Image (tube, rainbow, N blue to C red):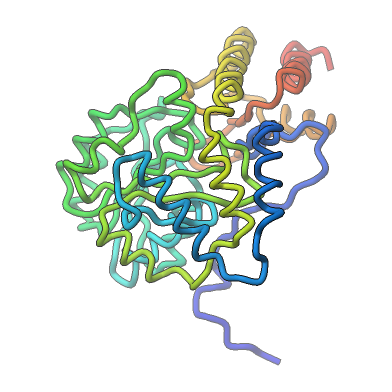
Amino acid sequence: MKYKYRSGLADMPSYDVVERDWRIKINANECGMNPPPLVQERAMTRLDRVAFNRYPNEQADMLREAIADEYGLKKENVVLGNGSSEIIEKLFATFGGKGHKIVYPQPSFSMYKIYAKAAEAEGIPVDLEPDYTLDVDKFIAAVKESRASLAVICNPNNPTGSLFSLEDVEKVAKSINCPLLMDEAYMEFAEAAGYKNSAVPLMKKYPHIIVARTFSKAYGLASCRAGYMLAAEDIATMTGKTMMPYYMNVLTLTVADTVWQMRDEYRPRIEQMITERERMAMELEKLEGFTVYPSATNFLLVKYDRAVELNEYLTELSIGVRSFGAAPRLENTLRFSMGTPAENDQWLLAVQTFARGEV
């Protein structure tokens, strides 16, 4: 029997989420630790009181209000999502459609291309410079020339780790007429290191700036799927129209709200990941043939001529890293997420062993 699938669906690229039971898993930019025990205890206590038979209206409003208060905004400026990924997908749907253009840097979050196609919009990638910095003038020109309906910048950028300056972000914002989405999934790591690069302070001056964040990275809630968006009320309202009723479940909302209230508990862990990233960068830079790119995130991007072979060796040892193979602009690169100090010692030793020809 032949079914009538939606036109173009068969050609849609997919995001590979197939995993194996890695001994050391550092391939997805996850937090290497579960939430702090006190946070887990508080969350479980709250979950014990959840009315599972009711739709999650109250919990969603509570979290939106708490996030809004932190940023000096109103609840109407906050949209929740199942991770920032869903928020980005819905924004692409909001500003996409036939004939619409969405501009984003390359390399960056690989889902931008997929979301643009799903939204029936034309994705327009703008190549980063060889050192993965952003040519702001080139990016602005691409937005203007394409008459884009949406521009996107991931800051800090995944998978490169690059941190774009607030001055560059403001230059883009004041030079374009379409909404500018700042994907700040890793901004907590930059902020903990003392950088003030978030676009949130620019939102009042430039109401077309949208900021998306997630609980998956710094707060270790990847399994819960929780994120949020800050935007002008009209943008938030229109984006909300693409969401299903009750699309956030009460379990996620309760845990995310608990984490939000107890964010200070995560500070030592975030600082530890930063310290580990700097330690690993220093050790990898000592290895012949390795180029380690500056990072303001919880991961490192490394270029190495034998990256494919190194990845195969690590796989044999059940160490999962992200290999980009022959992906455009990412040839011969590997991305290492920061695990626990003990895990980092183990994968570093494996990399050193391979690089020194001691295999």
